Image (tube, rainbow, N blue to C red):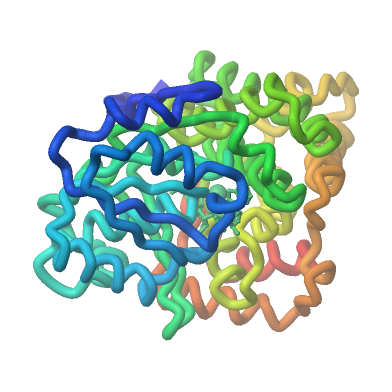
Length: 384
Ligand code: NZQ
Ligand code: ZN
C-alpha cells in the first residue's frame, strides 16, 4: 500500500426527512445564498422543504445553474455573493449545482479573475463556507473537494480541487431521488461505477482494504442499479445507490492506491466538444480503455473479472474479454449506449479530442502516464 493521509470533513446527514436538519446545520446569523439548477427542485417538493426548514434565515436564491455548470452563469452568482454580503452557500441539486457552488465559493473570495482558478490552477487562500442538499446520486461532489466547470465561450471543461471547498455538510435523503428521470438515474449509477473503476483498475499494490471496498461498491451498483430503474420508489434501493455514489468518490477507496482518471479526462473533452452527458462519455471511453490497456491492467482485470463477475476460466485472455464485455453490457442494460456512433459521433472526434487534451498539456494520462496522444486516438478508434 502507498503512503497516504486521509481526512474527509463533510458531515453526512442521511435519510428520509433529514432536510429539516438544515435548521441546525446552517450557522446561526448567516446570510445564505441557496443555489439550484433548472427547476427540478420546484417540482419534487425539495425547494419547499428547504424553504420551510429555513424560515428564520436571511435567504437569497440563485437558480438556473445548468448541467455541466458554466463559468458564464456562475459569474453572476459571484456578483450576488458580493452585493448581498453572503457568508454561506447552500447548494440544492445534483453534481452540477454542487460543483458550480464550489466555484462560486472559491471565486467570491479570490482576488483576481475567477477562471484562473481552473485555467491556471491558481492557489486558493479562502472560500465561502458551503453545504448541500443532494438530489442526484452520482458525482460524489457532495463530500469531496473537486469541481468541474465549463467555459462556454471557449468550449473548455476544466476541474479544480481544494480542501477549502469541501461542503461542511451534505444532506442525503434518498426519497428526493424518486423524481429522477430514468436517464439521469442511469447516468448516476454509471458515473459512480466508473469513479470506482478509475481508482481500482490500475495495478496491485497490496491494498486489500481498498480493493475489497471498491469491489463491494461495484457489486452494490451492479445489483441495485438495474433494480432502481424498475422500481422508482423503493427506499432501500435508493438508499444503497445514494450511499454507494458518495462512497465511490469521497476519497476513502482512493487512498494508498494508484489512480487512472484517463476515462474522465477523455470524457470531459467529449462533453466540451459534443455536449454529451458526463456519464455517456464515460460509458463510451471506459470499455475502450480497458481493452487498450489490458496488458498494463492485466492483474487487476483478472481480479475484477473473478471477484466482481465470478468468472472462473483458466484462459486468462477469455476472462479479460468477458470482464470487459460484462462491463459494457451493464452500461447498456442501464440504458447508456457505449459507442461514439450511438451518439452520431464519427472518427473526426479522435483528432478533436487529442487537440483539446494538448491545449491542457494533458499528454500523459493513466496510472503509468503512458496514455499519450497516439494512445488516446487508439482508444477512441476502439470506441467508434
Ligand atoms: O437542473 P435541474 O432542474 O435540477 O435538473 C437536473 C439536471 O437536469 C436533474 N435533476 C437533478 N436532481 C433531480 C433532477 N431531476 C429530477 N429529480 C431530481 N431529484 O438532473 C439533471 C442532471 O443534473 P447534474 O447535476 O448535471 O448531474 P450530475 O449529478 O450527474 O452532475 C454532473 C456534473 O458533475 C461533474 C460532471 O462533469 C458534470 O459536470 N462531475 C463532478 C465530479 C466531482 N465534483 O467530484 C466528479 C464527476 O466525475 C463529474 O466530472
Ligand atoms: Zn464522473
